[in-house]
Image (cartoon, rainbow, N blue to C red; front, top):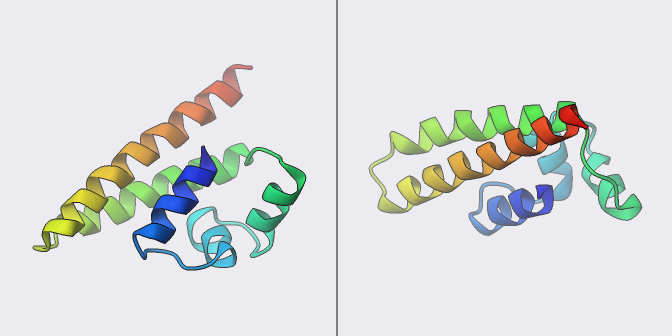
Length: 94
């Protein structure tokens, strides 16, 4: 699921590198995303929670824009944040 978040943010031009995604969206070291992918591990609960919070924050900012594309991005960010929360809850329940 976190791969989807990275891909969509990258395709939207919101993030450009895995290092930036690690730091700005997951709140982790710049190598975190690269290590997750290399080791095929799921993100930590902390990274999921941080990602959800930051997605919601950015979605609020995009909603204030007058650009039509910004509203689409904001809506998708809200959806991705919800998926992060669902994954976080699943981890906590197991």
